[in-house]
Image (tube, rainbow, N blue to C red; front, side, top):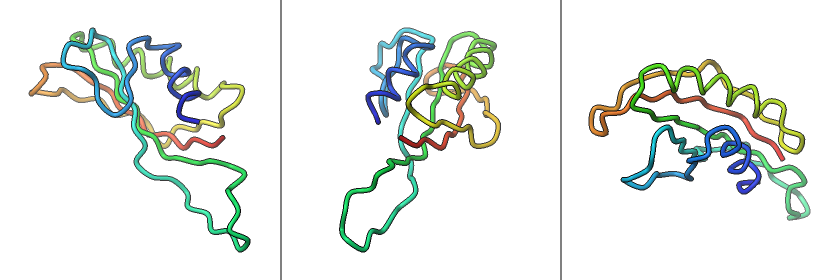
Length: 113
């Protein structure tokens, strides 16, 4: 699931990284990370047939409007993915990261595979 999700994000934002971006990452770039998911218990101790995760995607840019315009494009593309079921969880948030000097937008998603 992770490789498919990474490729789906990178199709919209080519500079895409899991969990953390390198210090010299060109903008705009996206980072994504899991922060939970549905836990299933199986009586027969079998592997689950469906993988689920809660995922957060953050888009960073030096331009104040770029994350705000890229995020809706990313949401639209992810919702149409042929293999993953990806649903945004609420609206996206925008912010400014003072330490990095970059504008950002972040969105939470529920992902199933």
